Image (cartoon, rainbow, N blue to C red; front, side, top):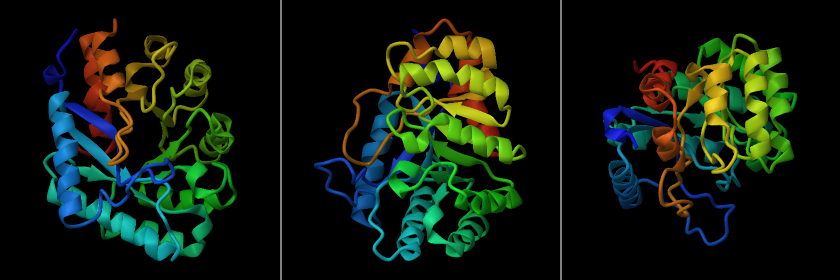
Length: 277
């Protein structure tokens, strides 16, 4: 198997904070102060063990928001601070807003791009209480288009709110916006859809977070859609521990893909997308 250190591996899918919706989490792992430092130590140790040079940070999902947009601002500020403190390993970060936060979400997109220097906006609609193609998304994506940054949207395999066809609706409405489908290979069924979706929508890229170990069809996807459409992501959370090894990375390294294709998937594509190349 190829060595990850032969590539400048860039992991596109790291969440800062706990997945509070999963039972048994303690929360607060990505918060400022000693908690943030402890989180970074754990995260960087994981990356070093597996030859991951850099990663893209994004907020955790399911964070408590009794104060609405104020809590979303707090979460985005925390992710931006994390990036700044360890920028050699985390050179870029994403912000989030809820489609249900009204016009305040538009102002927060502006602040995150213009003030915090975020490289895109991410949504995980199953945690945000609405479908991917909710009409409120139109205004948010208009603002994303104005700033010229990508929209990152989760399509986890067990959520009807995040069914891939709903992302297709948005990609059709906003053909000049670059979308990244996170968790695109999270079920064997989804894995068979992805080459077809890629052919229909050239403005969608696809990440490997939560990639299933059997029938993930990655090599077929590359044959049919091209290596330039695929991005390595592991879906790392501060807590709880969801896996011990970065399966998508190991699977791609062990695959029959060419070294050139691996280099694109494991880092080059992400750096180009984020303006880091």
